[in-house]
Length: 422
Image (cartoon, rainbow, N blue to C red; front, top):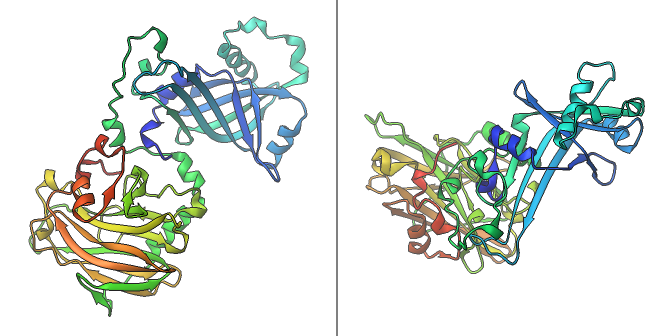
């Protein structure tokens, strides 16, 4: 999800949100197009899972599709529109939930049949005795079983507690144009199951990246001020370092990529790729240009850049290396040695070049490694190796010639080092 500050993963909040929905939209696999059908529903939560109950006739297209593939998606949504009343900068609000699971029949003699029917009646404030017994022979009950790992919610306005789930009655609220304070949500690490499903190929890519072997010895070692030409390859850059002898502190390092739009503008917050936003939001995984992986350890901190897929509106990609949480841990680059950025051809695993990050003897906390930029139909890297003492995103953006037009930037924690690790 691009706006991860809107993502909701707390089961208690999702349960409360389910109570406000009237219709479940069931998505299924069909031959040429997806098949989505609206249904009445009920739900139950037990044994750490979400159970969604639906009823339908004994035959039909969706039952044929279920037999072919029982993997389904149930989505729910509610929208509040108030275009004539601006409230905290919003003219609308919404709540939604998506759940992925397997759909199966509940046989009529199964002890789950009537409880499932009762949950459906509960959803619409109907008494259990209002179920028409004569309809039982011509109707089947089905259950969609979802692990909580496969369920998530989304909200336009911040939802932190159960009290925040109901829509605000803006028509009867005092005029309030002060925007919501979302700083804690911007900095919060959120697990998004939809991204894991949407990018199945990306997972395979990451596994390949982890298994690839990159030598720490490279014949072509480039230093500050040099330019490197490498054409239009798919390039994987890996960060290597060693701790100085006698340094027993836990040190984590990070690679970040600023994907700049013409002419060298940091336009949106999702144009930054790092551990808390590992995939550039350039569309579905087929069009993804930059992927981050790693846990901050030497050799596993990597960026995979598909240069042939970089769209014309982007003219350069800036790469930054920093020590995680350096200010709080009182750490700097003097604790590291032999810091190198090694680039390989992702498709052949052949080494292309290495950049010697020679600022490790300083008291700085991050290094602006360089800028990949277009040169006609090919790409080049202009090595910089300029260090910065504060890890400050705004300073890095301006100090190294990046013009930022990022409207969200002042809402975020100003120092990357304070963001939580996954």
